[in-house]
Length: 141
Picture 1: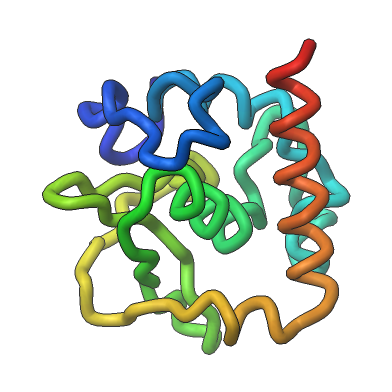
Picture 2 (picture 1 turned 30 degrees about the vertical axis):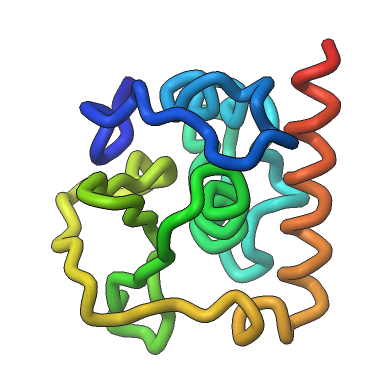
């Protein structure tokens, strides 16, 4: 596994609706089959590819991870006014979508991210729902 914080791959879901996930490491493997151009942030869709599946998937993935494992979502400022989202559950800090960067990020808890703020954008909420549905379908296959 290549994501930042993969040493926490044995983390277990706290939401029984997502018990099928099994662990954080297994969720990452499942997500590799769920991330698509249609779930990528519109401003990044031209950069998305099967070779770079985590591109533009950070916020919707981080909030889905929060649904499954609890914890908080934080952001790394990107310099263009946007934030790259990641998760903190207890002492575990991890970022399932870190592979899209060719340089290491600095993860701090200085910039909490609010679900309602992110999902005020209808397209982002729709991408989140699409990703969540894809994960549930993947679990049934």
